[in-house]
Length: 308
Length: 253
Ligand SMILES: Nc1ncnc2c1ncn2[C@@H]1O[C@H](COP(=O)(O)OP(=O)(O)OP(=O)(O)O)[C@@H](O)[C@H]1O
Ligand SMILES: [Mg+2]
Image 1 (cartoon, rainbow over the protein chains, first blue to last red):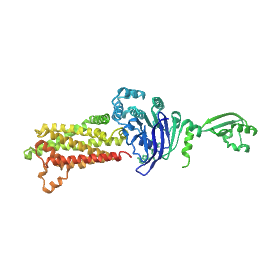
Image 2 (cartoon, rainbow over the protein chains, first blue to last red):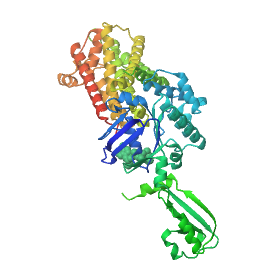
Image 3 (cartoon, rainbow over the protein chains, first blue to last red):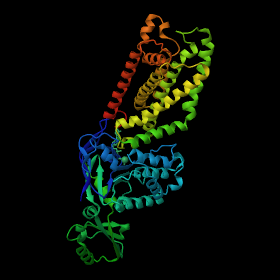
Image 4 (spheres, rainbow over the protein chains, first blue to last red):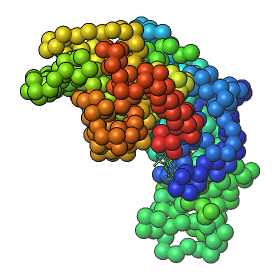
């Protein structure tokens, strides 16, 4: 697939001497939704800020549709919309004025129809004449999204758009993201709600300590790193694990009433058939069973916990 | 050239002035009137004419300069300091705008405001003393040059300041004293020779002198030198701002 944003060997050392990014390489494909995950302080905002021109780049290059972000900043920045992590808005401006300001700032002539549509999509239309400081936090977040969409960007960065946002807005937001994606907009989002990434993203990137540990297609990632667990609810409580079953590394849970078997979805043989036969031989009977796929959250926690 | 961006920033800044119209226009008008009452009427009645001009009329250019300088610096420094303080500057930094366009927007608006203010003060002064402008073209030129240079200076101050104290201390402790000591209310020719020489290091002397010349054709230093000094100051400010944006000094980490 065509790449629209390309980051190569990007490093960033802040004036304090802190190395926030260490040689990031990343290709973002046109029209995809990429979720960047990583613990607090991993460098997600730093990466986004460099691409958008808010933070000076260190070594390395970033190109947007083939244009260098420093040399051709006019072209690259006009293509990008940013919803920052912090709620930074003007206080005394009206919603209408501030969204139109953004459109002008990004070099476009006034277009009241477009701004009206954006405000309506974000359920901000009733608030268009309100001063921003009179809005609630979630409403301010919507204003920031409206500002970022005012100049019809082709690439949209959403830096933790759902932090402190209620269920309604979260759903509105994902609906908007889906619609933008259908319109061909490339979306890069960061979030700490991993279910969100699991639901929304096409690809997942994980950053930790300034390094991009992996970027992978979501389904591929889940398949590769995902584990499945088989839980057996036993007929009778099991006091002790029979030696004949030790090879399966079973876990006794629920006070010995359940047995949990973890297996790799990737391997040819899951070992389930053998396990069930051996259980039968050992005289262990069960009344029910269930399987569970590990979530992206489990995968994520496992990856960032890994020793450096 | 991203003219839409220039227009957006300029309009935004001018709208801000309208919201604080009392603060940005009414208060300088009141303080100018007070100066007239105190200096013009009370003291002026005891001072004979200076080089053929009544004292009240003599101080008009100085008074306009006083407001022009302080307001240019305060307007421009606040205009850039505030978005830096609240964080909304991120949007300007991420927008497809060049340094020149940012300056046209912010500094252009600050300079416009102080020029409007200068005009209002001149009109107010006209209520107290008869005004005579010998060289209207040069009067406007000095007004424009001064408003622009000191708005640029204010812009630098706003980028540099990391607290409200610094923002206020410079106009208060530097600009105002320099203006008072720069011959706004007297001709530096009345000073002893030593203090005359010291005064020549004060850039405001050149501004006030040139500006007064455009009214009454009397000056402390020659008009050419006044213009040259203003141009030097303006260029210095432009160079510093160019450097600020090149390195991201205090704007980008
Ligand atoms: N201006 C700065 N000067 C020095 N260090 C900074 C600066 N900005 C960020 N950092 C440091 O860089 C690291 C990465 O910060 P960044 O904001 O990119 O993290 P993040 O992944 O966005 O975290 P979060 O999930 O908390 O938003 C952090 O350790 C942070 O303290
Ligand atoms: Mg962040």
